[in-house]
Image (cartoon, rainbow, N blue to C red; front, top):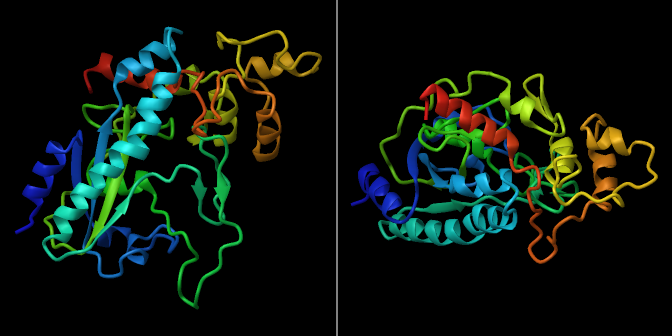
Length: 301
C-alpha cells in the first residue's frame, strides 16, 4: 500500500533533500498552461522534491577558483541525470500500486506561449509561439507547471526577492522536481511566508542590477550571469572593444531586454558551453550567496 509516509521515506532514501505533498485543489484558478490538472485530469495531489546543490560549488565561483563544476554538477547533472533516475524510481513505486505518476523535471529551455522570460542557465530559451490547442477548451502544448508555485503548495519553500525559491535548511541552493499523481496521499500544508526578509542584499550583490522593485529582469540577469561585468576574472580588453557603451555595460548600468540581450550573447564567450547548452555562471550566483550569508547570520538556516 502506498501512502505519504512511504513516499517520503523512499524519496529521502533515493536522494531527495526534502519532500512535500500538495493538494491539487490549491492550483484552482491558475492558467490552464500552468495547471497540473490539465496534465492529469483526475490528479489528487502533487509531490515535490528538492535536491541539494552543494554550497561549496557556489563558494568556488565566488573565490574565482572554479566555475564549470557548478554548471555541470550543480545544474546539468541534477536536472538531467539525477532527477530523471530519481523520478523514474518514484514513479515506478506509485504505478506499481495502480496509480498514475506524471513525472515533471525541469525543462530548462522551454517557455509556454506568452512567457517572454529567459533562463540564464541556458544558451537560449524557446517560446512555444506556434503551439495551438488540439480542440476547444484544451490548453496549448506544452503544459509547464510553475515549479516555484508548486514548491510552495507542497510546503517546501517560497520565492524571495531574488526570484529564487528559498527552503529551510537549504536556502536558495537547490533544484526541484515533481510528480503529479492520482494516488490519494495525505497532503502537507502549503508553505507560509517566505524566508526572505527583503533585506536587499541580493539586489546589491547582482553585478547587472537585474533585481529591483520586487521583480527580476531575466534577460538582464542572463547577460551578467554570462560574465558581462568587471568582476569577471576572464574579462579581456577585446570584449566590446571600441563599443562606446563598454564601460556602461561592465558597470551593470545598461538595461537589456529580450532583443538586446540576444544580440550581445554573440560577443560573450568566456568559457565553453556548446557541448551541453548550459552557460557557465560567471557571476557566481552572487545573489544566492548574499542571500545565504544573510539568512545564515540571522540563524534562519
